[in-house]
Image 1 (tube, rainbow, N blue to C red):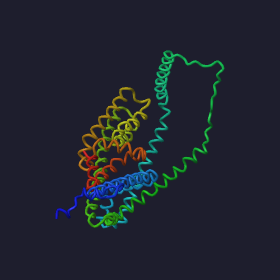
Image 2 (image 1 turned 135 degrees about the vertical axis):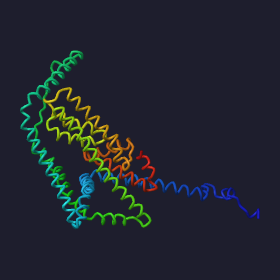
Image 3 (image 1 turned 90 degrees about the vertical axis):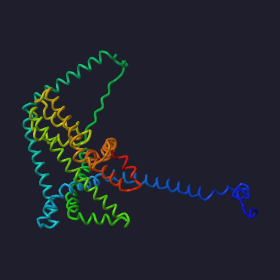
Image 4 (image 1 turned 180 degrees about the vertical axis):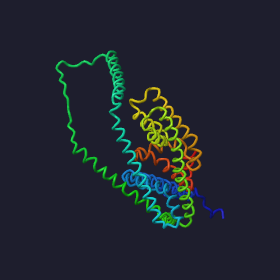
Amino acid sequence: MREQTTSEHDLVAEQPTGVPPRLPETAELQAGLRGARLAGSAVTVLAVLAVLGACYIAKLVCVALLVSVLLAFIFAPVAELLERLRIPRSVASAMAVLLLLAVIFGVGSYSYSRAQDFARELPKYSGRIRAELEKFARKAEALRKSTANVLPPAATPANAQKVVVEQQTNWTQYVTSGFGGLTDFFFATAFIPFLMYFMLSWQEHVRACTVMLFRLENRNTAYVTLGAISNMIRSFIVGNVLVGLFMSAALVLVFALSGVPYFYFVGFISGFLSLIPYLGVIMAMAPPLVLGLGRIHGTEALVIILAIVVVHLVGLNVLYPKMIGSRVRLNPLAVTLALLFWGWLWGAVGLVLAVPITAAMKIIFDHVESLRGYGTWLGE
């Protein structure tokens, strides 16, 4: 028996010279697994890049779709209430869409009338605005002169000639260049009411068919994931509305005491602008300070700035976690990166959609075993 047994070392030694030795089966299997992992990682990276490229190229389509989803969640209770009153689902969905259009028309007409009133009253205190601007201009001129006295003038050749190039503005070209983007915007916006209507009227059908797209063993996970995303979006919207109303009421009171014109309208705008994480506190300062030019002075402006900062901090650090924190569990770094990325990708609309998109991604990661590490990284 010992003579018939051949060791692995003897087999390698009997191979011809120049032929690499045969690896054991376990080493070959490990090498194959590593290659499969690398190929899978490469495919995943390419798929992510393809999705991001599609989101960038089809920006208007993606934004219109996501805005329609948010509006459908906002007006879904209206459609459900009408359906309980024995109104057909299709009719209830149409009435919800009409309610949305009525709200948009009412807000637009009210904003337009307030803008007209402001334009009519603008000449009354234009002198004050001019005086305030002249103060800044004098300070800037004094700073320039002091800098010119400190820094030596640059040497200029005696025969140097000053050349001034004036470029004429071609208004026709300017209008036509922006006309394509404007028409695309209105074209995509026109689809939002229709998308919202079909999302409301075909809600159960779309959800059931979406679950059926997955394999049988994954359908329960898909159903639970879609339910968690729906609850998150609904809580996100309701919580934002309640927090925005609280901040708007507080700012309306402060603006009224500070003498800001149209304080009831400006406070509402600043309150909801404060909902945007980090950047909202800066954006909320612009409406009252701009409309208050010529009417408010340094003390009132300081009070307005401090009030906006305090209301923003209280709203997003005290009220926001209590109302939405149980559904949107994102760490501050993830929120900041999401705002930076989606704001770069989709502009101002990306800042509004960044948090719900990232929260939905975290829910998906948490329910997929191979992606739970990413969900943990995004979480608190």
